[in-house]
Amino acid sequence: WELNERNRIGILPALWLSYYYLPSELKACFAYCALFPKDYAFKKEELILLWMAEDLLHFTTRKRMEEYGEEYFQDLVSRSFFQPSGKEFVMHDLLHDLAIYVFGDFFLEMDDTNFSKCTHKIRYLSYRGSARDPKKFEALSKAKGLRTFLSHRPWSLHMDHLLEPLLCTGSCLRVLALCDYTITELPNSIGDLKYLRYLELDYCTELKTIPETVCNLYNLKTLVLKHCIRLTRLPTNIGNLSNLRHLLLPPTLEEMPLQIGKLTSLRTLNTFVVGQRNRSAGMKQLKELQNLRGTLHILGLENAAGVEDGLGAVLKDNKFLSELSLSWKKYVAYLQKDKEVLEALEPHANLTELSISYYPGTDFPYWVGDQLFPNLVKLTLFKCRNCSVLPPLGQQSSLKDLRIVGLLGVKEIKSEFYYSSGGSAAAGIKPFRSLESLRFEDLSKLEKWSFMEGEVEGGVFPRLKELRLRFCSRLKSLPGYFPSLRILDIHSCYQILPLLPRGQQMDVTYPSLETLTIFKADGEELLVEGGLPMSLKEIRLKSCHNLAALDEQAFQCLTSLEKLYISHCGNIRCLPKGLSTSLFDLSIRYCHLLTPRLQRETGEDWPIIAHIPNVTIQPNLDDEEDDHHNNPDDDSSNN
Image (cartoon, rainbow, N blue to C red):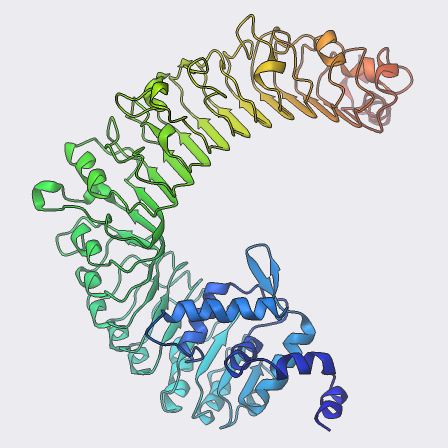
């Protein structure tokens, strides 16, 4: 009978049986998803925090609540209740209908037409309207046992009009999530929601202050303010929120309250801002937060005190952080304490990603590049303008992605980049043995990049797949051996002429190269010296203004070439006659000397490209001629 009844209202028997045989703890977690609209992109971490707030996770002292939530979520994924979609997850419409059915009379999907349906039974309410009449929300006072109120779209109702009926329900509310860009402040009465565990005010972009009464929410576990971009300060007495585990903040904060160090239960703190005032928190308060996990961005480090104030090690004992970002204010004057501050921020060896931005020092402390980070896979040094020497990053055994941007003091890359002080190839440790992606950008004084391929068997970069050089205007050549390189991208490196010194062959230096991109590089010999690797599948040339021709012999050897794009190369006169039959995509744009020769049927070089399936020539001279004849105002017609 039950199956027939559910089939009558559109619930497929197979879906119902899938739900029926779920463990009891998963049934409630699945049903809770009815609160979100169809096609909603679920974020795993967000949903777990909501489950926590509603006591849907059955946990013991052996594991953290978040770990049980992770297990629950993965179990639902394995049973196909969620489908992965990039980094997020989606739920099929039929499963969403099932979740609504399971919730029954305890759930209301409220819009501006059904306020009257808000009865005493309602425990979970999802509002998807935009009502402005406060009288309509008086119906909320009937839901005495309301536990969750979610709003998924901006609206224009004043917060007082919403909180008044919610407080009349008896303050049973556990979850309050609002998305309203018109909210400029919260009423003091929000502190009366004494059972509240989850408060989300994300995308309240006009919110400027948080009232002190929020600090009365002693049961609060999650506070989300991540996109409140006008918010500059937090409540002074935030230390009263002793149960707070997850605090997501906007980057616009000017400082942290002194009591932030009392939040020792915090697991998530995405942003920590070192303020200028003595009444704001500093690095000592951050040191108290030893349970932080995931990602931490530390801003305002130019305001941090040095070791003379007893700073000491701040993060070295925090073994749960996986991603760390350290940032100074743009282009501040260098003081000796800045290096001391960076020394004190040495992270635990478990770190996987590190970013250092606008550090004003001339060199880095020893730990940047130290071998004691076996799990570090991504490292970014950004706009550290005064640094003249790169740290010995070659000894990071797990490093896969390295980005060095805007280090204007670096003139030469030497052995120190590959080995720590006193090290060499004789020590037996190959540099950069895991690196797959390398990016040098805006190194405007870099003139020489020294490789040591003769000293290291297999080359210095044995696994490097992507090399991107941008705005290194003084760099003259790329010596070295890249056995695994697939992508070589050169942008605004005006003096790299040619790509290799004389006597070297690109086919030997880049035996695996598949994509070559050159943008804004001058010189007629650019693609002549050393030929081209036979492995190439795609070539992109743009704004190489002095390039007059493509080497005939080199292109005849490119038997795997599939795509050739040439754009804004004004001096190139002709294409090689022996283009490979493998070429299926050719694009020539704004090469005024070349374009006339490639006109369909009539151009001198048309037979060279006639076999290519996809050909794009811009501007098309035939089209231009038609436009010219159809335009009576054209100046040339009056001559």
